[in-house]
Image (cartoon, rainbow, N blue to C red; front, side, top):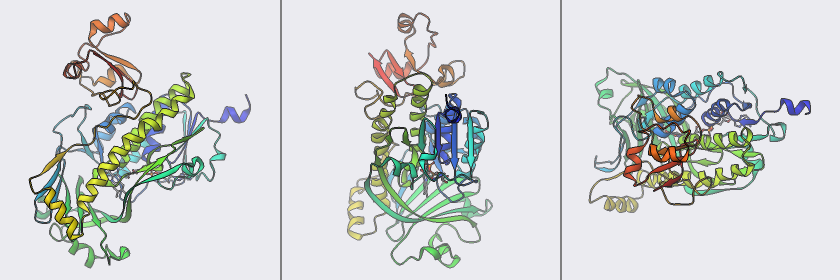
Length: 455
Ligand SMILES: Cc1cc2nc3c(=O)[nH]c(=O)nc-3n(C[C@H](O)[C@H](O)[C@H](O)COP(=O)(O)OP(=O)(O)OC[C@H]3O[C@@H](n4cnc5c(N)ncnc54)[C@H](O)[C@@H]3O)c2cc1C
C-alpha cells in the first residue's frame, strides 16, 4: 500500500459545526479513522439553535455524551404556544412531561456554543479522530479519505462538488435574533412565559424562547422600512419588546440578522462525496428542528459508513442515505413553513383568513413522526421506517444501553429463542409497544429505526 494511502482516513469531514462534530464522535466510536476540518478555531458565537428533541438526546446517548449534555441543557415540559396580538391561543405544540418515548424528555433548551464545545471535547476520546481547526478546505480534491462528508453548512463547498439542485420550499424571510441575559430578580423577568411563545402579531411577529439560566431568546421579524443595522439600537430595540421587558430588566448578550430559508438539496451523494446537515437542507426555526435534522442525518450515515468501511457491506448501502432522509427532513421543513405562514402573516386579508381558520378554537400538534423514505428497510407502511421507542428496562438501564449499536430483534422471548437459540432475551424490551401495535417482533437497525416487523 502506498504511503499516501496509509495516511488517508476512512472519512474526512468538512465542517466541525454541531453536525460534523456529532458525526465525528459516532464514526470515532465505530473505530473508523476520521479527519475533521473547520476553517474556524472557535465554535460559532452568534445566536442560532436553542432547542433539540428527545430523539436527538438519544443520539447523544449513542455517542456516549448524553449525561454531559443533559447537565448543560434544560428539559422542558411546556411545549410552544402560538398567540395572536389579543392573546388568543391559535396553536399549541404539546409538551411532554417527564421522559417521552425516546427515554428522554421530548424537548431540551441549550446554548449552542456550550453544546458544540461538549461535542468537540468528546472527540478527544478517540485517537482515531484527528481534528484540524483553523484549516479551511479550499478544494475537495485535497482530501484523500475514502469518503468525504460535507457538514460545511449552508454555503457548502462539498455541495458544489456534488452538483445536484436545491428545491425551494418557499420561505425566505429576514429576522433579527437576539439573546438577552435577564435579571432573575426582576418581576418582569419572572412573569415571562415558561413555554415558547410565537407571538403572531401582524404589526410585528416575534418568537420568545425560555432558553436556560438567565438567557431568553427573542426572534423578531423584519418589517418594511427596518434598517437591519440599527435594530439593536436601544431606542429601537427596547420599544419593540416593551410589553415584556425593558433595559432595566435585561441586557443584550448577542444579536444577528438572518434570512430564514426552506430548501432541500436533491443529490446528497456523488461517489465518495456525501452531505449532512445545513449543507443539504435548511429549515426555518419555527419548530426548532433544523439542527435536529442534521443530527438525524449523522445517525443515519454513521452506521452505514461503519457497515461499509468496517463490516464489508456494499457501497450501495450509502445510496439509501438520501432516499431515506430526504422525505423525512422534508416533512419537518414543510410543517415549519406552514407554521411560519401562521406567524408571519401581516397582510390584513391573510390575517383575517388565518383568524377564521382558528375561530373554532385552538389546534394542537406534535413534532412530525415521519417515516424514512424507501431504503434499507422493508417496503411496508409505518411503523416500519419510524423510530422504535426506548423503554427503560426493569434493571434500570435504557434499552439502547442494553442492546448496543447494532441490528437487534425485540419481541417475545420464546419467539426470539426459536429464531436464535443463542440469543440473550431481555424479556421486557418494547413488549408494551409491540402489544399495542399487534406485533410479535421488530427488527431494529443500529440507529433504532424499524427495519421490519412480524405479526
Ligand atoms: C436563528 C436560528 C435559530 C435556530 N434554532 C434552531 C433550533 O432551536 N433547533 C434546531 O434544531 N435548529 C435550529 N437552527 C438551525 C441550526 O442552527 C442549524 O441547522 C445548525 O447549526 C447547522 O449545523 P451544521 O453543522 O450543519 O452547519 P454549521 O453550524 O453552519 O457548521 C458548518 C461548519 O463548517 C465550517 N466550514 C464551512 N466551510 C468550510 C470549509 N471550506 N473548510 C472548513 N470548514 C468549513 C464552518 O466554519 C462551520 O463551523 C436555528 C438556526 C438559526 C439561524
